[in-house]
Image (cartoon, rainbow, N blue to C red; front, side, top):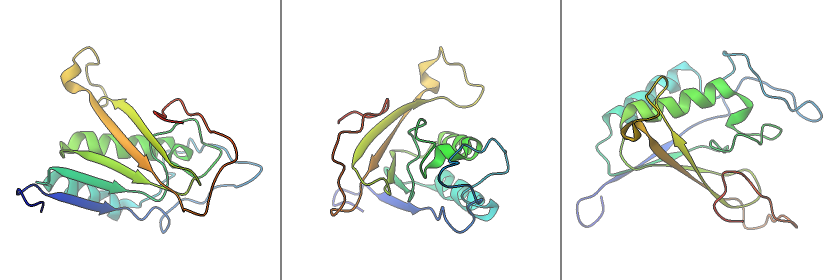
Length: 157
């Protein structure tokens, strides 16, 4: 708890143990198989429960891989498995957990990303159904890119 009574939860995802194997260089392609996954069913059930029951003001969902950027499917990130990525985003949206912020790494640069999300089948003309999700990506202090990387979802570069 913060000094004024507000609370934060840190939710750590294990996106390695149950990861569906996929090809690496030079065949880094998205898997459109709906069964491709990072978490496994037991962890999905746990995540849904933790988010649904959260009373925290801030919920930090930590993933070793980036979640929001969609155009980096050639590297290791959630967009490699579009169905699993969509399931994660919909799980967050359905939970109504407050103050969800995604934290990630493993890309050798820092980035802040945002995406506007709607519940599946939701009315996109009704902005009450809309939710902004933010992701903060960090990497090791010993890693650097020599050139700037521009993402459609980046706020700063």
